[in-house]
Length: 373
Image (tube, rainbow, N blue to C red; front, top):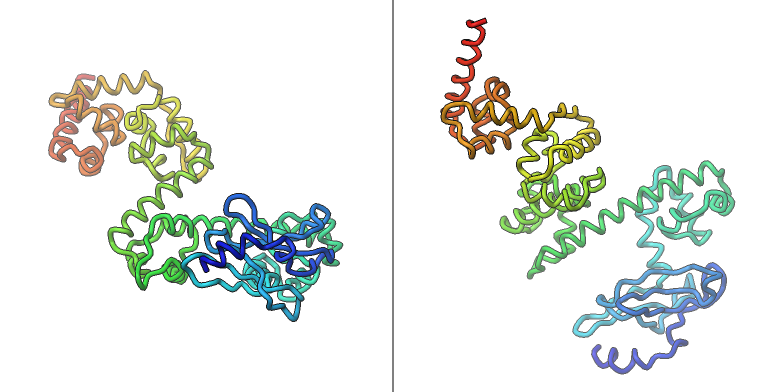
């Protein structure tokens, strides 16, 4: 193969890249090699004819024409060749294009085998092509109503986004897993697909035990889940409207999921991240609204400062403890008095007995105040 790549491919003429007639306009389909690693099959009548067939990147092999011809479409077969690897025979590019897109077309809501056949006869082969279609033109091409065409285009857009997320997940796994003997990427992905893990969101919510069943080690599974949660939740939070600079501060503070925004008080988040209370409250409002969860009551900076003074007035409560209590959502004397000692201890890291003692002091103060009244 090295000799083929070194001598034969470089010396091929444009004519030797021709594959046959374009099924749409009758022009000539040919293999096109672009700068970088891109390659595809395009029509000689471009831009009047935009029909094209995508090919894998050249890292998987350099596309060449073979002498075999498809009986159905009259196109020469295509082969990918790469140094040190067996040739990858794609075969008839149009047959391959049709077969590789069949499953995704079937995923479009309301799609039937008969409609898929009609679509392909009109030389529309992929979900991407359908999603870019103009309703009136597609309706005319398929002999259907404009409303039906709109539904197909909308459904194609939904499936296309789903395919994008699946591709993103595959790339995520490839970037983090090293193939080993008996454990290829395709094997891992196949096992995960059987478990219903096809997108980054699925991966972020899955259990380490499922990853182990797919042939991923315990250490790899732990890192994979941690990364998946961070990447996926960052995407969600960005979509909600959390700026990238702020998001980085939240992640560094351990606030990774949207739910964590609603589980902490704005004061606690402000203390954890170092961001202003007003900024944090804006972010919390956005996140809670997107999750359909109640938005925490806004607290002024003045009220927070007043609450800090109340807490520091409690005998034995130090500044480091105050900071820990703020991170645990305790913002003033009253919130500490009514809180569950065990819960606060778990969140703040302060000994439960000390929390109970502080609560007792505050309760005594309240009781004395009532007696005096």
